[in-house]
Length: 350
Image (cartoon, rainbow, N blue to C red; front, side, top):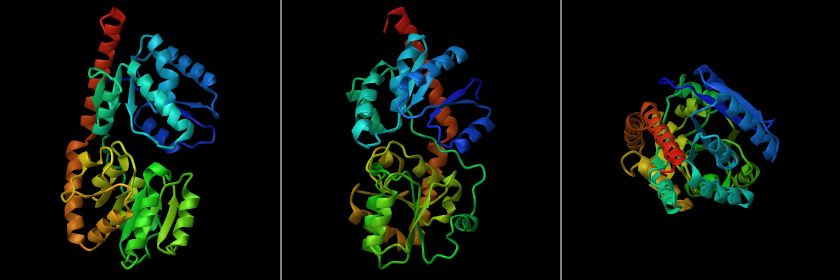
C-alpha cells in the first residue's frame, strides 16, 4: 500500500450484495467496514460514520458520491481532517437525485481536494468556483483482471458458443444516462448484417428495453444477461464493445475494453474524446444518434483488419497512460495538497 494505511467504509442497503468488491479489497490487505443503512436513515448513518472516524482517526477522508459528500464531509472537517471527493459525473436520473447532485456540487466548494475524472468535469467545477489549488484532474486507471478468460471460455460462460456472426457487447447499468436505448435503436438499421448483441448489466430500464427489442423483432438477436460479477474477465467474447452513453466521466468499462483489446465504438461525451481518437484507436460517434452509431457499426463489422488495428492501439494506450501506478501517484499528490490546505485553513491563511 505504498506505506499508507487504508480503511474503506462501504455504506450499503441491507439487501445489497457487495461480496465481490469487498473480497478483492480484503485480499489486497485493505481493512473494510460495512455500514448497512436502509432508505434515508441519514442521522443513524452520520452517527455511525462519526464513530468510525473517531476510532480510525484518518488523516484524509476520501468520499465518493453525493450521499457521502453531503452527509460526511462537514463533520470530518470539524474534526480537522482533510476532505477529498471524486466527482465521477452526473447520473441524470432526475427527481431527488438531481436535487442532491446540485447540493453536492455546492458542498464541494468546502472540500480540501476535489478530483475530476475528465476534463469536462474539471471545467464544470472551475465554473462552480472550486479553486485551482483544490481541484485536480485524475482520470480513472485500468487494472488488468487477475484471471482473464480466453475467447472460447468467455463465450461459453456467457452462453455464446453457438451464435452466428460477430458479437456486439454492451456493458453498464440500465439507466437513461447510459443510453442502452440508443444502442438498441441503432440495431434496426443493420438488420441486414450478421451479428448478435449482448447486454451485460441490470437496472430499472431493463423491462422497457426488452419490450423495445420485442417490438423491433430482434428478440432472437439481442440477449440480456443481467449483472455478471467481474464482467471484464469475459470481454474476449466480444468482437466489438459499444458505449452509447449520454454522459460520462472516464468510463471504466471503456478502459477495461481497451485493456482487453476489444474494438470500441463510443459516443463523444465527457472524457471519452480524451481517451480515444476516432480513426486511430476506436470509432467516436455523435451521442443520442442511433443512425451515427449504426453507421459506425456497419463500418466496423465490414473490416476485421481495421477493428484489430484500432484495438491494438487502444490497448497500448491503456497500458501506458492509464496505469494503476500512475493513478496512485496522482492520488498521493492530491492527499498531500489537501493536508496542506487543512494546515492553511487552521492557521487562517486560506
